Amino acid sequence: MKKENKKTKESDSFIERVIEQLQNYFVRNALSPKPWKSLMVVFALSIIILFFYEVTKNLIFTDLKIWQSHFITIIILSITATSSAFFFNKSYAKLHRDLLRESMERMLTYKSLQ
Figure 1 (cartoon, rainbow, N blue to C red):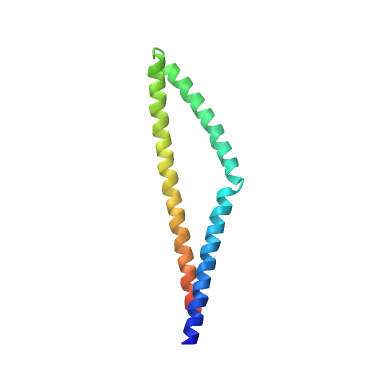
Figure 2 (figure 1 turned 180 degrees about the horizontal axis):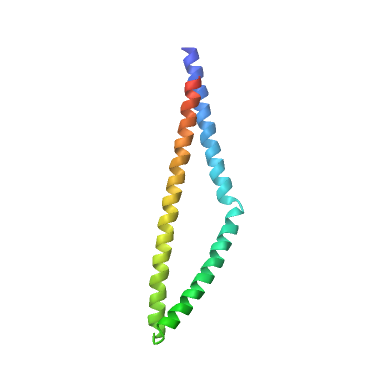
């Protein structure tokens, strides 16, 4: 009986350590300066793409009024932002599932080795 309690306490403390490590991983990566580099790349690419979009729109539609032009730009940017958010969330969900699957496999492996 005492051995079972000891094993249960050990496995519980292991699970707590794994959860703590996962939390630390997410906090450390969420607050690290690394995302700024990729955000700056996205910002620069957005400026370049939008510049060429506006030039192309003005060359193709020469007789657009200003509000028609604004409306088209708003629609295109909204579609782009929604699509980007969809694909980001999809890839983030896959990463999250993979991480949870791996942590569960580690916990099961640890329990089977006891």
